[in-house]
Image (tube, rainbow, N blue to C red; front, top):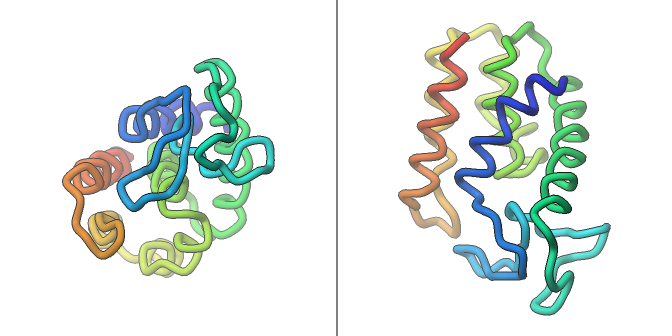
Length: 150
């Protein structure tokens, strides 16, 4: 499982970026670290958690990705490569597991659709607050390319 996390985390880190202090994301949600909306079980606010180190953020990211990967393994019913799981892990981290679980992408994967057909579903998830964001489009393209690299 750590191989999959090691494949996904560079994409997540690149596109989320790291911030040691709280900031508002593109839709006004308070975040810190690598896009964390929760820290130590509490919602991130303008003043909480304050300052975090990159080491703390790396540890938190690994813990979150490990948990999320276990959830993914529970809903994907077909065999996938590590690259494909890593792409799904990055996507799920960004859009939330609930959104992924109800996605056409997961339905296509589990129904045995072609990898190319499923991969194009990554591009559907390029909006925040009903606005297409260039950064999300670039991220989805990177995730799609990783997914296609079987």
